[in-house]
Image (cartoon, rainbow, N blue to C red; front, side, top):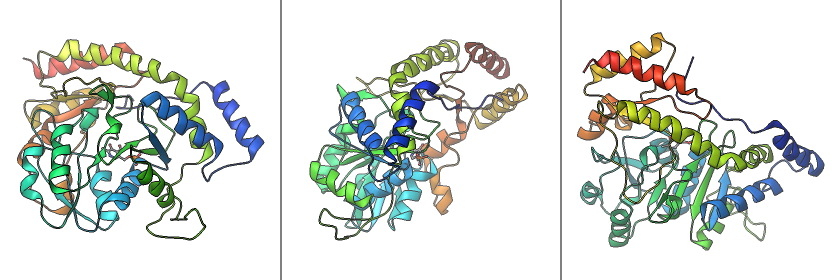
Length: 356
Ligand SMILES: Cc1ncc(COP(=O)(O)O)c(C=O)c1O
């Protein structure tokens, strides 16, 4: 069975060296030396001032909300993974959904202003499939209404826009380091901010709100990454460029064969790609279902990602573009160890099924 993702594992000998260090130090968690080393390496590699590693992308979102958003409403995209709106709800805020742009699949900044009121606590846009949102427009909205922007950048590892990491934008950017992501720590996530004071506040929130003098001040939780997870990240770290290159080859093979037949997401200008996903937009939902059924017969399993849209979880009305895109989009398998022959086979099946 070929699924959309297959986790990559590091060279065993390199991982063992880090595990040996854990056995030597007997330090398993609580901001251990391997977590600190991985934070430093990621900060230098990505060009981000403060990198704070946590237990998952979801906990990173929850912590970001606790750090910068007052109680109230958070405007977000219905075209995302459940974690985006669940983090809002879990922290006691209310998700307010606004529609996406039908070309970029990202939250449409033009529609946001009409949703802002005195209860708006933050805007939480998602860089869907790693494609950066309209960063300048969201920065303008943030300044105009004095509300923080928290970017869900779960798909964005390694992506650069405007000559720097996309993680450098917003009050806080959050990513996922889950096993299925391009770069991972088994379970894990990270928060990025240029604001040192905010970084220090976040470090306290992820450790029960314990302050430098030992007193406890809310909000607080346990969102710490442990040393074994950091060991996985450190062992994979030397492979990052190789992972991206292998993905690029597969992505290009899909694209060359399918580009005349499907619509694709419009990518933000002056922006690199990390080839984490290969989404195709079908002409109709029926076409999508036919393709899925034909691929599954050959044990190739694409994923309807994201379907259904998040507003349906809350019994909120469908929004035009997110609903339409969600019904017609699927992601095809792409991961570094995928055989190019599977890409050829999958595209052959797809082209035969659509017959145009
Ligand atoms: C857009 C988005 N946000 C948040 C998350 C949650 O990340 P994690 O699985 O690390 O908790 C995901 C996970 O895939 C995601 O796709």
